[in-house]
Image (cartoon, rainbow, N blue to C red; front, side, top):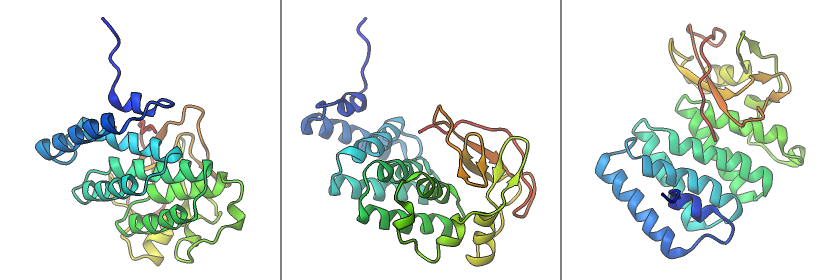
Length: 226
């Protein structure tokens, strides 16, 4: 039997994008999302992944706006996969091809994510500032800057948590400290004093907080992927 090729894979190939194929694929994903409900459509997940990769090299303002809207709609219903794809788009896409307007959006969306008590966007912003070659020349919103500045991390046997990131959420931003059982995602290999550590596989990980407050963490690493 011939190998099955998902439309999202074909569209990402060099010179493989056609408007007709994308329109059909896009429509199918949104219909399944509407039919099954937010967080239950695997096809919608493939569309989020497609947007995250495609827009890095082929920026389209309309497609990007839809990506943001759908990601936040899903997040409002408790499903964050689309939003995590959006932050990966910002972090890796801007490192590859910098756009001032997207960098501003990245900061805005990171602070918005922190407002909701999440740290995923912050980790991706921190990774970008660590690895982007011209990061020192960039302006950082004063509200965001303290959260990615270097500080002593809190280490565990399997990962470490950036102390200032958590303190900023609790002390400066009014967000409750992570509760028992809350899952925080960080790069595979942990976060060192010099910033995030990127694993060779690109796999991201999560740590489950084992106690309240900003300083207690232990748990099993689980894959997150790109």
